[in-house]
Length: 117
Ligand code: NI
Image 1 (cartoon, rainbow, N blue to C red):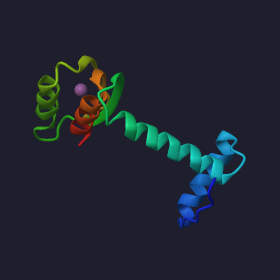
Image 2: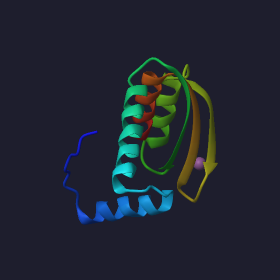
Image 3: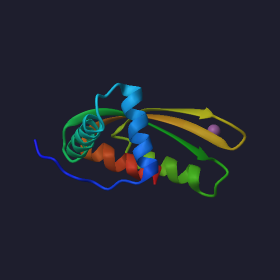
């Protein structure tokens, strides 16, 4: 194992310490190693054609011009990835949707990025 030095601002360091306490890590190093492993794993998985299932949850304002139509168009363009979508009228203008997706990891990741952009 190598020792490295990183520079981090006070607010972010406070978040790391809160995480250490909440999850019971024995040190900041252990918490940061875990976070880096998870990030590396996620990056690796989304870069492949590994078959996967995913849920994507997002909230949007249905009164925003073109947005509901653009979302529906994106979903129809990738109907092959879509298992089901649940729509909840979350407020007077806000809608919450949970999309259940299935397909190659890279395609799902790209579609999720498109939906949430
Ligand atoms: Ni709605």
